[in-house]
Length: 170
Image 1 (cartoon, rainbow, N blue to C red):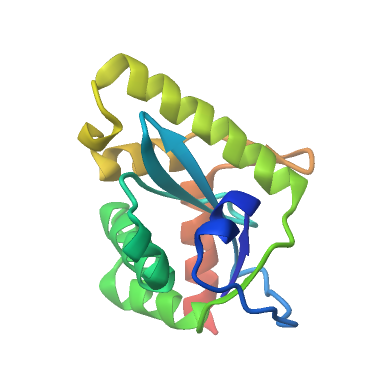
Image 2: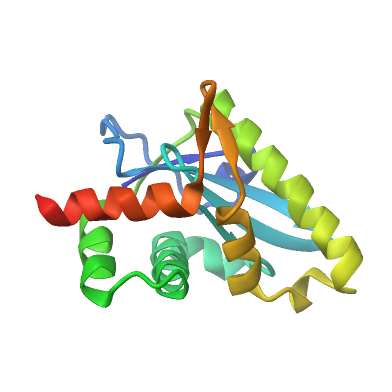
């Protein structure tokens, strides 16, 4: 897995090893750190499917375990979406070990910006603190709305499921 970190996220990581690893379509993700209501929040976005993972209330020790955080969020989101355990395990195995860099894609960053606006909007209307957000519900919401990338309509949830199904056939 190759995680393209935003400058804000890269600044919080204990180290950012340089990598020459080429990302496959399956293993490329973007990670972003944002503050909402004085809390640090992580948002991960799969480069191809635009599948999102959100985690509020991240503290400094959490950054040392970013790979575990991502895998746990991904597992929980897929489980919540009704993906079979065997397919989830195949998807997690296909990610491989995490490598980090700061090479970001403007298109993916635009999708992340739109998601953050949606999160902030939902946050202002429905809860008093971002820490009261139901992470599963919010992640499901982010993945069940259309996105546009490279002039193509994307439905993150169904596209991620199709991508996992393609993995299981190989």
